[in-house]
Amino acid sequence: MKTLRKYRWVLICLLLAVALILPQVISSYLAGILCRILLFGTLAGSLNVINGYSGQMNIGHAGFVCIGAYTGAILATRTGVPFVLQLVCGGILASLVAWVLSKPMQRLKGIYLAIITMGFCEITRIISLNWVGLTGGPLGIKNIPAPVFFGVKFNTPERYAYIFLAILVIFTFLTGRVLNSRVGRAWISIREDDLAARSLGVKLGHYRSINLMYGAFFAGVCGAAMGPYYRYIASDMFSMDMSFNILSMVILGGQGTLIGPIVGAAIINTVTEAFRFAQEYRMVLYAVIIIAMMWIRPQGLIGVSNSMLSGRGIVKKRGRGQKNERPA
Amino acid sequence: MNVLLESKDVCKYFGGLKAVQKVNMRVRQGDVFGIIGPNGAGKTTFFNLCSGIYSPTSGQILFEGEDISHLRPEDIAKRGIARTFQNIQLFKFMTVLDNVKIGFHLSTRTNMLDAMLHTRRYRQDEEMIQTQGRRILEKVGLAEYASLPAGNLPYGIQRKVEIARALALEPKMILLDEPAAGMNPMETDSLRQFILQLNQEGYTIVVIEHDMKFVMNSCSRILVLNFGEKIFEGTPEQVRSDPGVNEAYFGKSGYWKEAQEDAEG
Image 1 (tube, rainbow over the protein chains, first blue to last red):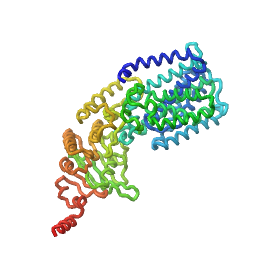
Image 2 (spheres, rainbow over the protein chains, first blue to last red):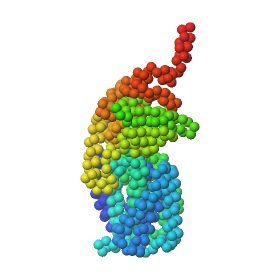
Image 3 (cartoon, each protein chain N blue to C red):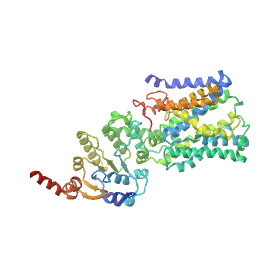
């Protein structure tokens, strides 16, 4: 394990190199899957910041994606602001909504948070379905222009993969840094024992609030990046199905680990693609995977002790010798 | 000496249950103040009132002359009261050092942007808590456990980690809820020495404890609670000779005498 730790930078560079070359050598279909993996990797990662690191049970993550997506799409079709600004605006708006949402969430815990976030997800979907003037209602928003960088139009999955990759890399890098700081430790302390955290002066409401805002920001960024990729968004893309999809990636990969959700996203997207022939029945398989996971490895695939995949020793702190113990 | 923590007619009712009733207490600066009482006497409830986990039904709690009765735990921590818990509440999946690092939360200022950009403030804070954290662990005698997950350690060590974490707050007063529970006599004795050493360094200490030897040998003043009410407050010698306290602990002495007389025939 030590050698693995030593060479982790080499490995990370290798992985990045592969990710950089991959879109050029695979077919357009496979590049599409790669795009989904990268997109959902970031989404699962941002949900993991909320669920895995501060212990808030958010099951309505699609709501934030929805807000980001509509913000980005409206800006892109009506104003023509630069692409990066669309992403940032999507993120900021989602984050602002998260701030409002965090107010009623402050006094609640566990399953009650799940109900609030579920309600929130449905509310955003229904508003975006019915606010025809702004969102196009059931028709959604069409013809979202593809971004152009250095004269290159990012209108194919092969090219767009780089945008999703960049978002994922930035997200993982920043999150790794935040988690290893005073802020991240405050989040983790709240997850582990909120009463003890409070008696050490960690402002519970404040840190839960900024935790939700941080996760929502990246969900919003992903949402805003989705629009130009699919060239079209509609409210039914952001239903609870999407929320549960993201959640299952987090659970499969391992809550409270940096790399886990990305692995989870890769596996679930691959499996659902591979079983496309089974049509609706693949959802059964999907459910079986999650149930099996909860049963066999409740801590998720990457939730192991000294795995070099575990982000910067954050997982190291929890595993080690208590394999079947569930994170609190 | 001036009064640091004072409670005035503090009551806490849970529905019809009077957990704490009209308790008056004065902890002076520099005290090692003991709170004793039989099980269910309301000691821990009283602690929870002092540290803001509960707010009193009526009455006032003053810290340094200011009312803290209805402040939140995080605000009370900020004013300088640190505490440990009866049923050890460590961050089990974090290392011992990281547990202590969270104790420095209030004395550091790093925000999210600092963390993302690794600004000077971030580097200074991290360096500070790294060295200070190690220093505290050494002082408590836990340096060798620094990188182990706190949840895997033996009970006695976990108790010490909790104290180390409380010390990181740099509090004026430390509330210890049964720190010697589950320790053997040797560990208890070294804990007693340690608490007295902390007291020498200027920390005011309030301690709930069942171990009479521990309390009698280390506390300067003792508050005795029974069924939520204060039955006595005074020095260990006074407590020992007070008939009310003896009655609460051993029952009515009359029965005891009768039993003895019966035995003698």
